[in-house]
Amino acid sequence: MRPTPIQKELVDGLIAEFGIQDFAKATIREVKLVASVAEKKSGVEFVKMEMGIPGLPAAKVGVDAQVKALQEGIAHSYPNIQGMPELKKEASRFVKAFIGIDISSEGCVPVSGSMQGTFASFLTCSQADSRKDTVLFIDPGFPVQKMQLQVMGVKYQTFDVYDYRGDKLGEKLESYLKNGNICAIVYSNPNNPSWICLREEELATIGRLATQYDTIVMEDLAYFAMDFRKELSKPFEPPYQATVARYTDNYILLISGSKAFSYAGERIGVTCISDKLFHRHYSDLAARYEGLDFGPVFSTRMLYALSSGTSHSAQYAMAAMMKAASDGTYDFRKDVGVYGERAAKLKEIFCRHGFHIVYDKDLDEPIADGFYFTIGYPGMTSGELAHELMYYGVSAICLITTGSHQEGLRVCTSFIEDHQYKELDERMTVFKENNPVILA
Image (cartoon, rainbow, N blue to C red; front, side, top):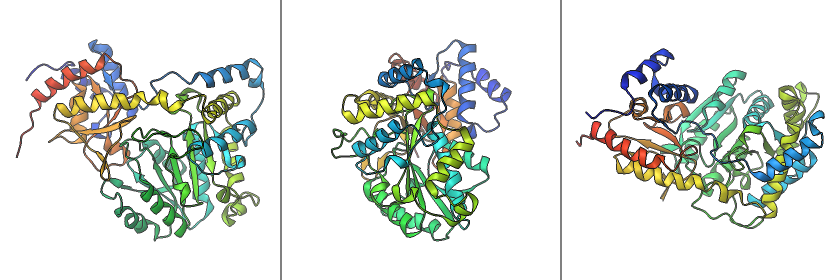
């Protein structure tokens, strides 16, 4: 056995010290904590792949607009709970420009990041019809969304989409929907953590069943337009971002400023509710909230109770970024394309040293290179692999924490620096020597 960059005793001691009983179930924050302390104590730089934080500077057009708003005194004023009119207008325009669908500005409601958008959406969807008290996740997915439901006491069910792509998706979805208790279907596209991208025919199936069973689809577009296999058109011209909104009126789109615009720190996003759903009357909501329809309940009740609105100056930033993108003066996709370049380099290194890509295809097409990808190693469970890689100064989270049933890890490309490719290659050479694959 060749020596590992980090002493095993150091890593194992920290895991025990922090009370992590099963490393396969360690949270992102726990993995980050072990990596940070091990790095400090050993003096060996970690290749950190566990946190999904943007690794690029915030969009300058947004920063300039927010600074200007602050300098002009906007900080003294409460924002409108429905959102700043200019942002609502630009959000509607942005959706038209890059998704190709029409949503009125009324239904485009600013939120303190998509996290708040999902929380308020879960509350509204789960209270709309007393017969429908359960959320369905098309997993793998963002673990914190399930924690949100745990906090509010709402039930949920999940299934791993790994074995249910294409024609198999409809039957699997319907096996849940036919029970009549599903209030909302949730997925991200591109997907966190697997980076799979649901095809148009799969989205059409989801939309058809959502209409048939009167269920709301929550489409998380946190990684907006980051399927780098496809050219994104000029604004207002196809091809557009794939969406379920072409196939049902029962949808909520969650658009975040965090990744597309690298504006994570200011907690800004827009929840876009279809015109039909925004004005839909649910008797259970009306009885509870003075006769209000779905959209007003979302904004004037849920969001008002949560935060009294979204940061005023951040709304100016989001409006400016969306306007510049729709005007064609700011190519946000060009900026974030670096994530795809990093993923391609990292995949090559891992695969050359015996690893494999777990979620490797979208039906017949190789998975895109992007913000995340997934890796596995023969003969190792998720927990064993994540634990072992810590000895080599590499940190990542296990897929089991995302609702996946596959053995492997999520790798995030955001923090990778140019000098680390060589370091990772050398460390994985030692890893492979110390963990030889035994062929059957």
